Length: 487
Ligand code: NAD
Image (cartoon, rainbow, N blue to C red; front, side):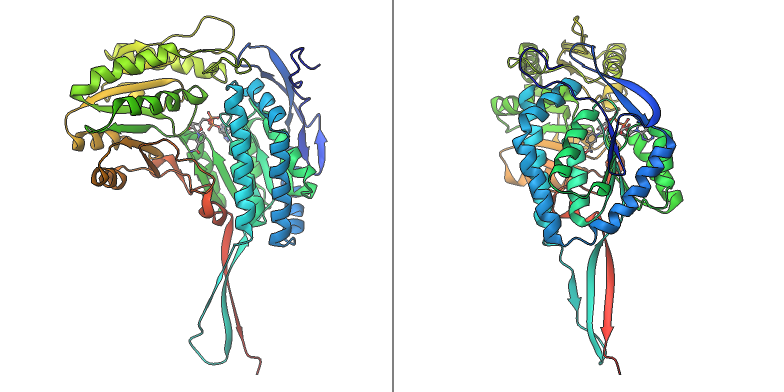
């Protein structure tokens, strides 16, 4: 039943296998909860192994169909899907907020940006150029170097951007000519369903896309082992990334991983603190900090540290916490109960290490998974929050004495996804850009995630990139064709 306020109803949940929406897929059911109320939204059918294998087989058949479509045909279908997403953005965003918790405006931006990502990859499909190489001997007519789709892809995604993360994978994989078995997070399946429906309504042949959910470990093992699957692409934690990379290595399959991060922010001596704070506070608490490239460790010159901490903390305390469907809400709940416990563990460990809890640090006592926007200061390297990704609304602000020291602290962790810095000096900007060991550096802004730019981590934060022209190449393989004269 639709809620009385006119919002759309949470949909009946189903999986999509071999061209059919299935309300039962043999693996039992799991409830999906509203993180703002802890109420039950719906029941998700889970796939048993037989259905997982059926999905892989169907993707194999779908690949044979889809690779036969021209680049322009693939582009046309994907652009139509992007247009449908824009048309349905309000309804898709409402469902996204129900199951994930983020404020409605953030959800709406997520859907619109996801449409832009699909559009960009659709257009790139038309420019999937190879090249020709001059032959070195007589009698050879051409050497061609061409790009072909890798084959059916298993795509696994996290719950923090339930439309955007699948859209990154689907846009590029489908544009390249691959078929996909999508396994979204079980916490946020309806957002992925809505995205798949846009693709189907746009004319994607049904067997090209599958949507399965289930017990993640056995499901992914069966999927990766299936001979039809050529590549695995994960967005998730470092731990699961290592596990899936290992499975792929043993099976000789391609793996790419967009994994966790622990982004440092180096505030330089010459930075304007008003400007830094105006950008940093919303960036930190966007999506309740559940963002892989979220700014986490702020390094501030010692003389300005206390002022920065106080002002950051005051801005954090002023944020309005609430359900995502309330227009006044600036930060929604965490997406599931495990994150709340994780936040409590980070704070307990911080206190044990003598870290100052300057703002927040507690669960907000009401139904739902609300945790206060939290600001910590003076955290030693041994504290948990300085070593592990909090993936929640926690900022840590430490002082530094020299820029060398700040750079060394920024690079101290195995993570290497995003990093940020604020300076007016061009030479310092370039120095930071070169010395911060991450896949993406943002100087004087936080907008590293754009459809046109490659997005990805180095070190433990991942393998490969998504988005940008490079994101499409990740779903292709290079093949050489050389043709000689006959006789
Ligand atoms: P997760 O690794 O637990 O889950 C990610 C996906 O893997 C989900 O589909 C999940 O069901 C599946 N999964 C979980 N356990 C599995 C297992 N044992 N075997 C196979 N699959 C399994 O991650 P999460 O907690 O859902 O998401 C948060 C993490 O994702 C954070 O570390 C965050 O930084 C990262 N992330 C990275 C990016 C990026 O682009 N780099 C973007 C968003 C999130």
